[in-house]
Amino acid sequence: MAPSTTLSGTSWVVTSIAKVSTIVTRPTMVFGADGSITGTTGCNRYSGTYETDGAKLTIGSVSSTAMACADPDASAQEADFTAALSGAVSWDIRPDGDLEVKAPSAITDMKGTGDILASPAGP
Image 1 (cartoon, rainbow, N blue to C red):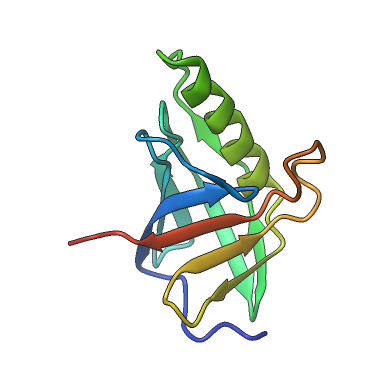
Image 2 (image 1 turned 120 degrees about the vertical axis):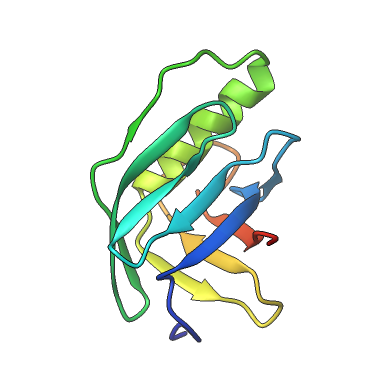
């Protein structure tokens, strides 16, 4: 399905990764008009680049701070999020307004695919 809008200039709060709801320290994604992507993994800040071509999404090299997560669940969530983000191949705005980032091979364990769902960030 073709995207209904552009990612440029949008901000999102991740609500699930690989069909698992995120915990209190939710990752964020901010897609800049200049092709930058920034946000938090839930524990660390990250930045990188992105490109879109229709529904295709390519995430470039991403760097992040290296603070240890205080909670083992947050650490696991951070690992899943960074794997899914790095494996992103496409995106779509769903009818409910949420962003779906497809990363079909990012997480290959029993959790399923590495797809990311995110809701628009508040003002």
